[in-house]
Image (cartoon, rainbow, N blue to C red; front, side, top):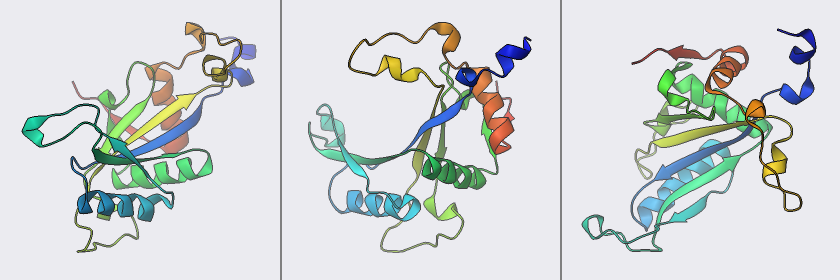
Length: 177
């Protein structure tokens, strides 16, 4: 590979954001307990997500709050990701990476985090962790004026995201078919 291409700062991969989501499926006390779990783990205030449509079989009405999420960026995102990967023993399956290079995995119980004890008032909650990667220059797709598409050669591939996680977080990627 070309030495100039390897040292190009615009090709550097970084973490854009980490989104933690807990879906409860109902409003009320259970949703407030899920908010407390996210607050304990991240120190950030979660937002409520509302259902998009009515599903009679699950007793869900359109506009009813059914989940909570929080978006972390910068240093807090990296710190939480290190803690979340520690819970998973720094192992994820290869299917956790999508075609755009994003990483998605689940944690079945919040009490598995280091230093967090079980609280009988809260109960047991699992969560989804989504990691979005970016390169410098991705802003052109989201800015208001002179918006443009990110070219294919500048997008992050699945293999590049896997290599980034191996190098920076000592992640073991299990080959599952």
